[in-house]
Amino acid sequence: MARTKQTPRSSGAARAQSAPSGSGTGSAINKDKQKRRWRPGTVALREIRRYQQSTDLLIRKLPFARLVREISNSVSPEPFRWTAEALMAIQTCAEDVLTHLFEDCNLCAIHAGRVTISVPSLLFLAPKRLPWSRYLVVASRLTSVGALAS
Image (cartoon, rainbow, N blue to C red; front, side):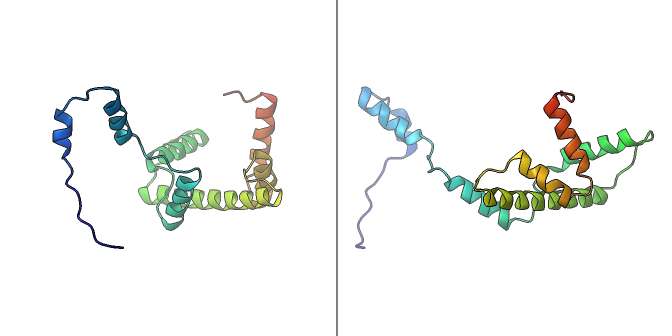
């Protein structure tokens, strides 16, 4: 590729001072300000690569800690006290279990010829993957009947 001289461009301050006159310049300014439109799936693939390379936790820490404290206080009449390390260990284990469950659910959907994971796939896998999954099945049946309306 041959080298060429770059043409000088006006700075943003000079462009802001001149007022747009006529209908032709208004559309040019709008094109400059338009957000970049990526093709379908490009951003999804970029996010997949980003999350596969990272080792950070995906669930935010404070809402997860609130949920753990709420559940533990509902079980016991006396409130538990949690250290930061204990909450971090529970969150790490919970994210690991959920990640593996969704991986298996994705394989189940691909086997069925689908791209999207579904609730029946999760309910099919839950008894095999999670020891406490019988509660998921009962809760899903109650919500489908309408007994657990939130």
